Image (tube, rainbow, N blue to C red; front, side):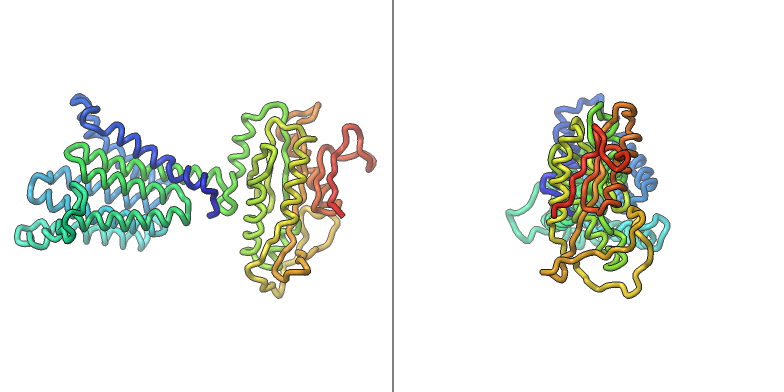
Length: 434
């Protein structure tokens, strides 16, 4: 996913980083009075029950199993206090297994809850429980002592054995790399949850359980954030989706400009080069739309269409920025990754090309792999008689049809001209330069 550095940093810090920071400020023995001890003990139950239900409902099996692992760790620490010999072994085993499980689950893919993959995960989890229970046997005290081995004297972290600290560092590096490549909130959530587990090992009593619950809370909020992004952001282009567009229109005033952008001959790109190339074209155009000037904001409208909204901007001022956008797309060099053409392209006309036949995607003569990408744009603003958003969308859509019918790679704006001539105030047409 192509994200700017600022956007990637935002996804990394919000909400997981903020939740961890809040926990650092609040989960201090000096700040939690004795009267709040029952709340602190209830906190893990609330997080894990609500989190497991929510993860199952949103079909995030990675987070569901991560919450299950954390809940079992919380139960083990509650049933076997670390002050006992058995509890100490369990704590040292958790220090090794928790980061390992979080890293493996973060790297795995989502799948159906009732599937073979879920069965394998449950089997591995049961095997880990069996190993930990075996290590708690007195006759295996020597094997359990390996969990606290310190081959490098002087290096370590209070409450965290060296071998466990090494696993934490490797898991953290792997999760950070995964997030930098994918930029998804759930990946960020796993990384911050790993940090919360590390802080849990350095705490004691109810605060240790509270930190484990905080790791679960971070994962739960990450799932919600990921669900929000899926609903409000287009995964292919990384632009806000149509639902985000409708939310943005709720705060519009009486003056604004709406433009609908359509990629010319997009169906022929798919027919000629394949849908993978079509996706590349969509991402190219989206990257230019994301940098539109004049305070405009681009949205994925659907298919090969996009919308650009200019709040508090009249039509005549927005047109200059739209023309700059059109030129930027026209002059962009797009290299097709594969030029293998389909031998039997599908038949059918561009739905926005009334009365016109098929047109092939053009290529620049100087480059066999450079594809000429253009867009047609229809723009409108609220009129004196009908200021509703539906009317503006309808007018912009009609202007886009005219831009397609009049040759593409152009901008049409305003209501349709009468008798072929523009009235006052008439349509503003920015023609393709010769």
